Image 1 (tube, helix red, strand yellow):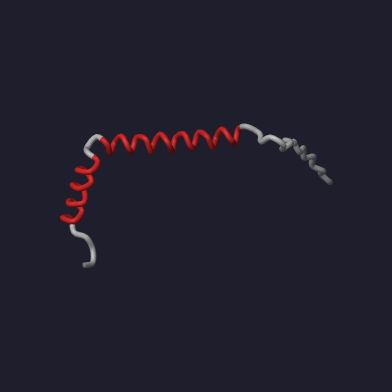
Image 2 (image 1 turned 135 degrees about the vertical axis):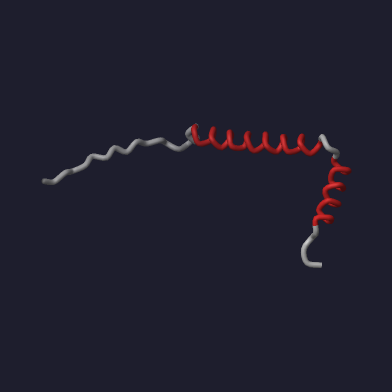
Length: 67
């Protein structure tokens, strides 16, 4: 009852292929990849645009050198 053998995994694979079909799995994975790509694009867009109500300030640093 410990680990699954190769035969167990083959049976699971056959059942999954029968349920979803050969063409459905790559289509599903492509949709997942598009979703991840759109999510990353949205995160980058949020970082690029300043938020409403937050003032963007530039802080200048002047070094005081003492010699």
